[in-house]
Length: 164
Image (cartoon, rainbow, N blue to C red; front, side, top):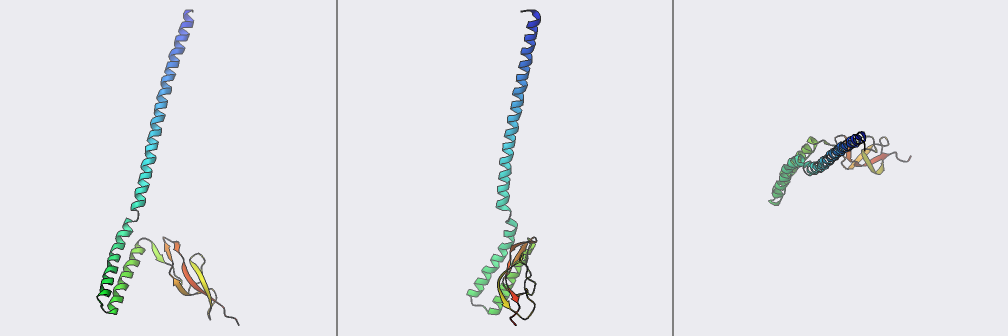
């Protein structure tokens, strides 16, 4: 071979070696990036699981005193204390419960004497009534909103015009 060909071959060989090194380096970077991403996904899933496990901790902590109140009310009933005091105690526990739910965005849906709304109310019956048609005349079960979204519709009885 001529000297020029030897130089070209040598140069091509060194270029090929350099490209091989660059390729190996890029491959290592890619493998590290994939490993980092895999670790990130695992960490993220672990964080989500922990969040789901403890997301309601604040609500539960606020409900525990209410549970204690129910326990005291049951004890008072077992001891045969007066009915009036029992009613006062249970009313207080109910108020505590409602206040705890309100703190977390839960509110009752207004129903009685309101116009029927299919999004917030579930009509279980229609009764003839003297007033206007489509008005809620009885509430069988309270409905609730959570931060403005219906989580349980009110079960209601709706008025209808009597036959004339």
